[in-house]
Length: 219
Image 1 (cartoon, helix red, strand yellow):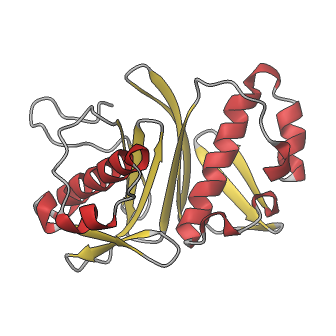
Image 2 (tube, helix red, strand yellow; image 1 turned 135 degrees about the vertical axis):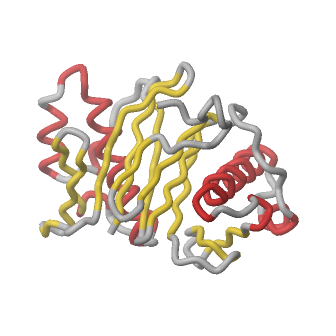
Image 3 (spheres, helix red, strand yellow; image 1 turned 120 degrees about the vertical axis):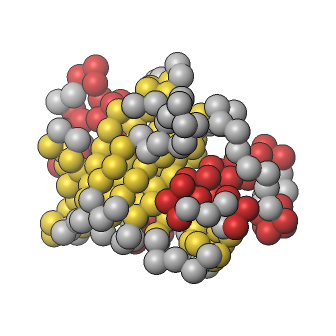
C-alpha cells in the first residue's frame, strides 16, 4: 500500500492493527510536512544532525494525528514525559502515540491504548549483538543462516516497540524479554511470562529503495 492516496492526497497507514492502531511509515523528504511549531523549535535538539530528523518526525506525527482527529496539523501539540516518550498535549485526546526514526526513515503509531513502534532498515550488514538476546532468541538466531540479520532486526524492533509501549525505553534489560513470531504476529514473553497484548505486529515493508522492518506493540 502506498502511504499517500494519489487521488485524494490523504495520508494512509502502512498497516493497521487492533484497538484502533494505525502505523504510518515514510522516508524523510518524501512528504510535504507541516512547518515546525514554536513549541517544537524550542524543544528540538540543538545539534544540527539531530535537530532536522527530530523536527521531521514530530511534523510527521502531527500529520498522522491530524488525519485521525480531523483537525489541522497546526492545532496539534506533542510533548514528552520525563522518560522522553511523546504524548498529545493539545488537543485533549485519549489517543496514545509512539514515534520512531532511523537514518531518514520515520514511523508513527497511533492507538487507543499504550502503543510502541520501532523501525529499522535491513540493507546494512553487521554482526548481530547476542548479549541483548534472550537465550531462546540466541538459539533461533544460530538456526537462521543467511537470514540471521532479518531475524535479529525483527526481534530488536519488537522488543523496543514493547518497551516504548511500557514507556520505559531501554532502561530495562533487553535479554529479559523474548520476542516470538507467527507470520506477522509478534508475541512477547517478559521475565518468562507471556504478555497479554492487544496487538503485536511485525512487518517487512518497502519504501522507495529501502526495505524496512517495522514492529508495533499495543498493550
